[in-house]
Image (cartoon, rainbow, N blue to C red):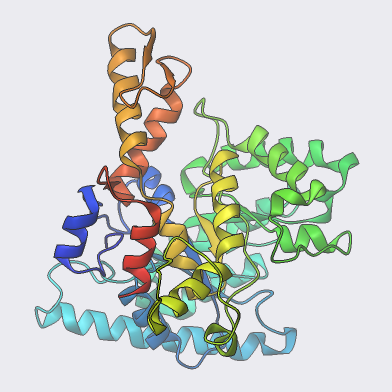
Length: 403
């Protein structure tokens, strides 16, 4: 699979100085963690789950979570499990058949998103791995909800057991969303306990996810579409502490992903609101340009939050609507300026360190303090590509929206 692989070759050639590289579900964990991008959640109850996975992959989604937890009602769990097993079985048969006929050259998952199942209990991991049979080969791993230092061990032991039973590498993505993490008096103990637990299972941890909706629920809070998670002081404090303990760049940290954005465009509003100015503005806008502007306005809050995610050390984002995916991925592309700075910093560091003016002549690049940042930028460049010097975020987003 490849980010922006759903765009035509000539469009990618126009947008990218360095093209996003292809990767597989069996690839390096650091590459996969960086490549998660916009991780789209889907309720496991959907009868069209197999077709949904195919459709989202064709539209640029690279990671999906099939949810058996908060996305469905308690009484729906047995039916959702059965639906999930059946639909993934059908998908496996479909791609395995294409492989046998030569339509797919190698592997059975390279044209699908990275697939994860969000479970409710540890027992579901081993049970589903057994029920899926060979279709477990479609999975990259499991999402572990309400993860604490008390409950997390059972989840991770179940994952290890499923891995042994299936012979399939399976990753974990713990979700930090418990009241113990929100409450000040227990947060420190929780974070250091979680850090010790995750370190014990380091090879199985792909990324740590933040459940901001649950954190807010502990205080009866909900942010409006005009505010980001960072405008909610309690949430911002938790994010800062999570990155402080679990997102360190000294080899002890993990990829921490951005929180979910709860709002998405309503179809009836898309064509009828008052006109607002956006990066796509024209003197006499066409109907499509108006639609584009409205979509852009609906994404304004999301775009601000993604930028703040990056500034605070988070990478990728939990998404509940396909309209969020293009913005997350467009803002994940490395700009020409970032790429230039990162390469200069690492070249300078290899030469012994020091300080130099950036090639854009607008900042100081200090080799040793900026090294970890530069390494992360080049890893992101590998999976999301590098934009050409004259290509902006608006053009990247427009290319995805207008496809």
